[in-house]
Length: 98
Image (cartoon, rainbow, N blue to C red; front, side):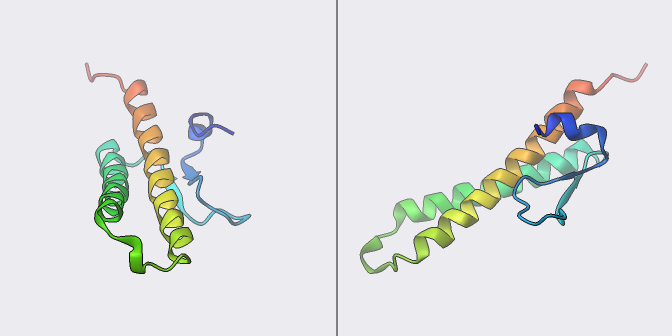
């Protein structure tokens, strides 16, 4: 189910949850600035990790590290994307005070 349709509920599970009962949730009524900051933090961490990997020499790397790294990047970018979608939906629904 698309994340935008679930915004009717206050607490939205992150797409990266792998359990039957979601444990990580986004408070869709939180301050949009805080939601956006959480998204930026995760996307920046993923970008920093990718930059580090780009600069590394993999000559001595262990092949088992690749799934660990890609999993970390998936979690960071998926959570960041979910948070950005909530922030975007809040901004699209925002009405200027009169």
